[in-house]
Length: 155
Image (spheres, one colour):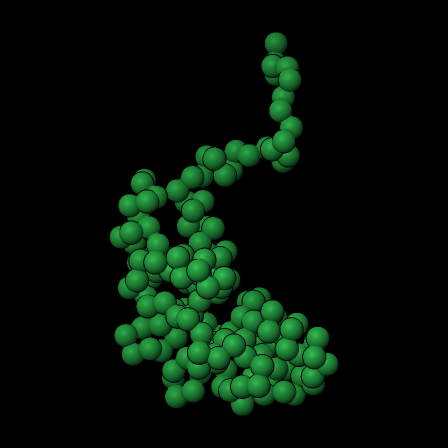
């Protein structure tokens, strides 16, 4: 498999993305945290009329709620990241990775033609995709790559 070629032709929809957690701007941070814990996800999409208006991440929780000593009953609209970058399901994986790298994003909502969220792209998914291309290199790493064996094993 040629990674460079695949990054240019394979679409984001190939990554088997999880369905996004979706809440409304008026929902509380408490509800968002409960949903994120229950589904073991690091972020959720905030939607109004089926359109992405924001994202709420663990980072938002720490910086905008905990560090600011705000109550968990705060509505998401007051602490979410508004107007997030998104990626269309038909865009290439390479363009999605570039967008994540340039914006410093760890998560990107994936939307369909109508702009409705259908998935959540994460750095973890990108790493899994890369592992598919280099399984021997990734899975055959020693526990400590800085340790080099001095003597031959065996007889």
